[in-house]
View 1 (tube, rainbow, N blue to C red):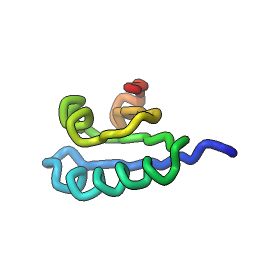
View 2 (view 1 turned 30 degrees about the vertical axis):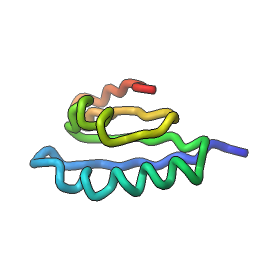
View 3 (view 1 turned 45 degrees about the horizontal axis):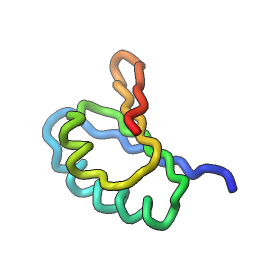
Length: 72
């Protein structure tokens, strides 16, 4: 089965949208074990590590510079 991918982009003016979305991402990861998550925006790594509780591929994408890093 092909990996499932989801792209989530967040603005840099607070973390309210992220706090609404991360429970959904956690639930999706339980149902889609091969889920790859791409996060765009300026979400601190500590916040990501504290909120997203699953073993899958998470990519952090900086939408300004275009770089990305794999965190898991």
